Length: 344
Image 1 (spheres, rainbow, N blue to C red):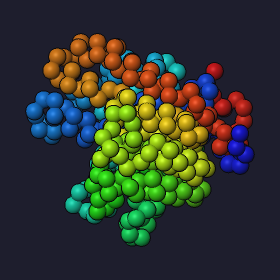
Image 2: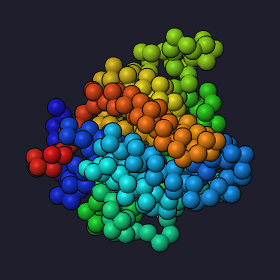
Image 3: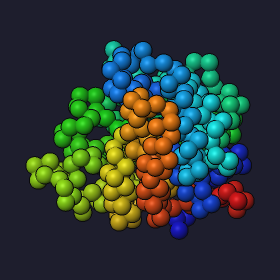
Image 4: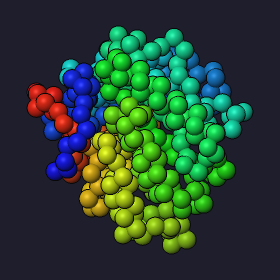
C-alpha cells in the first residue's frame, strides 16, 4: 500500500465513493460523446453528421444507460443530450457529467479547450453530478504558449471544483500538433507523452482528483499473436515497461479510457497493465462497449438495439470488468475517513 499523503475534502470523498464500486474501483461506462457519436450515426446511415437528430442521440444514450449501468459503478454523460439517460441509470450507479464543449476549433492551432455555455460546476451538481469531467488534448511537446493556455484552463476548472467541493476528473488525450495521432511516428513518442502529461497534472495546483488517460502505447503497434511483424513497434516487455513508468508517475488515482478500440483490444491492454504491476484504479470505457450498437439502431430500430445491448453490450462491459480484478482502490492515494472509501 502506498503512503497516503494527499488529503481530500468530505464532499470530494463522497463524490468519488459514489462513482466507485464496493472495492473503491471505478468501473464506469462513458457515453458523453457528442460529435463523435454523430459521426458514428452518419457513417451508419449515410446522412451528414449535422443532420443526425438530437432525438436519435438521446434515445441511444437512454438505451445504453438503462441496459448497461447495472454492470457499471458509474456512467459519464453530457448535459446537452445525456440528462434523460442519467435519469434511467440503475439505482446506486454514480453520475459524472462532462463540462467541456465537444471537439475543438480546427481553425486554431493547438486544439484549445473550452467549456459548455450555460453551465457551471454548481449547475452540473444540480443536474445530479457526483463528479465533473473535462477533456483536454495535451502534448508536452507543444509550445509554451499553447500549454500555458491549457494549464490555466485546468487551474480555473480545478478551482471551481474546489469551491463546489466536487471531484474533478481530467481526461487527457495525448497527441502531437504535427503528427497523425494514429500513425507510427506518434506511436513512438506516445509513452513519453502520456507519462509527462501525467506528471504535469498530478501537481496539486491544478486541483485534479482523478486522471483519465489513454494507455501509454498505441495498441495497434503492440506485439501479439495476430500482429504482422511490420506493424510491431513495441514488444510485450516494452509495453509493460511503459505501463509501469506511466503508473509510477501518477500520484493521483489513474483510470484508463478505451480510445475507441475494440472490447477485445481494450481487454488485452488491461491484461498488460496488470502484468506490469501498474497501479490503476479502474476505467471509464465507452465505445469499446457500445459502438457497434449504433449501426444496429440505425438499420434495424430501437428494439434491435435493446436486444444487441442485452447480448453484446453486456458481454463487452463484463469483459472489461473482468480486467479490473487487479485494479487498486482510488482511495489508496489519499488520506480519507473510512466511511467514504466505498459504496455500502
